[in-house]
Image (tube, rainbow, N blue to C red; front, side, top):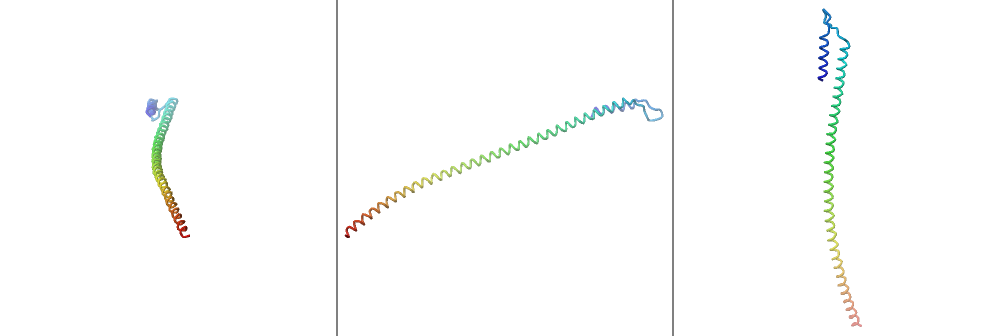
Amino acid sequence: MNKVLGLLDTLESTVLESKKIPMTDKVIVVETQLIDIIDKIRLVIKSDGDAVENMIDIKKEQQYKEVSYKRVGNSEDELNKAKKIKKGAEEYANYVLTNLQLAVTKMQTNLIKLEKNIESSRKVIDEKNKSINEQTERVEEYNE
């Protein structure tokens, strides 16, 4: 911007220092001098415009990177949350399985005890039946 202002000052001084036409407010200027200054102004404006565009592009890229970093940060947060949830679910599943295994073990122990009781009850019944059969045979022998 300062370059443009400097070139405009040069243009102004060129016009002010040019030969005046008497009794008019007109001046005689050297065309090549004016064209040269105008071309320089155009180049400066174009280069400044390019610089501004580059700055805008850089700013956009920085904003994009910031948004990307935030998204990555959010993704990492979400991933950490998911890992915590998964870990909690695994711990709960292990807890439930452990309790289930304990319950199954207790049931197996009780089943073994029940089978022993049934077996001992069968022996008692068999012995009583045997005793009854023997008594029945004696009674029949006695009655004959």
